[in-house]
Amino acid sequence: MSDFDFDVLIAAAHDRAAKQGLKAGPAQQGFTALFGPVFSSGTDCYLFVDERHTNPEGFVHGGLLSAFVDYVFYVSALAQLPDNAVCPTIDLQLQYLAAARAGDTLTGKASVLRETRDLLFVRGEVLADDKLIVAASGVYKKIHHQP
Image (cartoon, rainbow, N blue to C red):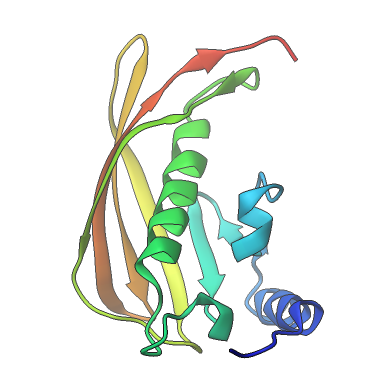
C-alpha cells in the first residue's frame, strides 16, 4: 500500500485550481475534506484525481465517484434554497459509463429538474476531462433549520 503525503496532494490541487481560476467549493469539512479538496465555478464542481482516489486496478474508485456526485448534487440543490436550509440525500442513483484515472480532472455538473414543497429532484453527470463517465440522478429532502 502506498503512503500518501496528503499535504503535498492538497497543495498541488490548490495550485492547479488557482491556475484555472477555480475557487474552493462550499462545505469542505467532514467527509468531503477527506476526498477533496473540491473546487467550483458557479455550481459546476471539479476534483483533481490523484492516487488516493484509485482502486487497486488503478481506476478511480466507484465510491469516490458516488461521493463526488453527492457533493455536486448538494451544491446544485443548495443554490435553490435559502441560507437556513440543508438538503440530505434521500436517493442517489449512478450509472458508471467509463473509467477515470489519476491525473484526470473530474467535472461535475447538475441541475434541479423539479422542486416540490419538501423535495428536490436532481440530475447530473461527471466527466473525466471531456469524457462522460457517470450519469446520475438524486432526490434531496429540503429541511429548514435555525442556525
